[in-house]
Length: 518
Image 1 (cartoon, one colour):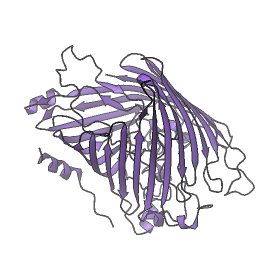
Image 2 (cartoon, rainbow, N blue to C red):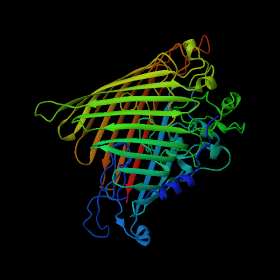
Image 3 (cartoon, rainbow, N blue to C red):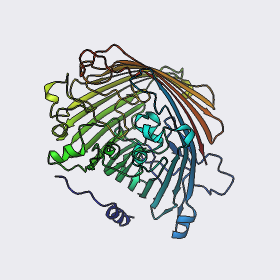
Image 4 (cartoon, one colour):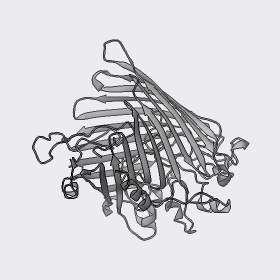
């Protein structure tokens, strides 16, 4: 059995005994200096308080100042607002996928408050909301058919009579920072190779626990974190970091714990209990990142969920300038290793989709051991105008990769929108181009070919086209349009239903998003 989880109240009390003047970068990296230490009420601040990154996460340009009394700690804090709209429409090709719940719309946003810094301490509070107008949402009895738009509401809440709409504290943490060490305790975003906020819908994916970043050299940092709970984007309350389904026995219990599509449906609450294991888990994450060597970015990462699995990842990217032309070539690799730590016994004879281990090597029954190789080559344009990319990934013919924390093991290499291409023995090729036409318009197109192992109960092979555009209407208002076109092999024999074919999961998907920051 595992050790009990540490109460956050105790962790917060410990932090107060330690004793910032700055906030760590919101993404994985070394600790940065305070962005804009200015008087916020003057007209001198021309930069927006925050700007959107390409993945729809936020970069803070303006942060609260340091103060010397408790009154100013509150009065000189900064509010950050975000109004957003996310709309979705999709159409399945195969009638086996009934076109129920083809549309979804979320309207809402967030209000985040960051206090000023007193004696190296500060805090952040963030509240998020997503409302679903009746004219563009699924019927309550069809929420189980919702695809990408499901993250604008909670399927569990709707199915159990709670209605549409999501209202939840998305962030709430105490922070200590002294220029070298940054510690956060509470509900927070944690961007790593395993865990991401994945803030492309209405509410980010967050984690409850404590994290620490330590700057050990110029442009070099190490991090460590303990998380006792996760809160996925379509949940109002936190839940376990890996257990699928709750222990209620309800048919809707599958939506009331870690129901992320990248998880393992054999790691259920009941299976943990039947195996004599604790269904409530701790997650430990550590990583090292350095950009100290010019043009080289290297990362080493580790994750463990005791009693379930361990992950280790090494990643490196090296930029090679092409003479004085402004062009550059940047090759990169990511090698992902997954080690069983007792989870294979719990999952038993089931794969990540909950199907029997047909077509898998016999060693997979009772083990989650596996690995994944990613490689890519980028051609970078002058003046950061864009890039061309060729990416490749291959999963070992062992267990499926388990990744329900929105980090996406193939992300940045071969993952296309809404795709999960890390099942056993899956091979993917992708080409992508991104171009910034001017200061207001950027576009991306990518084409991927996913070659699944058709002897296993996993999806049929498919090709995917994604087109994205970002239009900055003003410095505070952005519109993003996304289109996905999937063509699956409709003639792939089923391995679970002899004489029939695997489902044709071809579809078209349209997304329209607006973001206004203030």
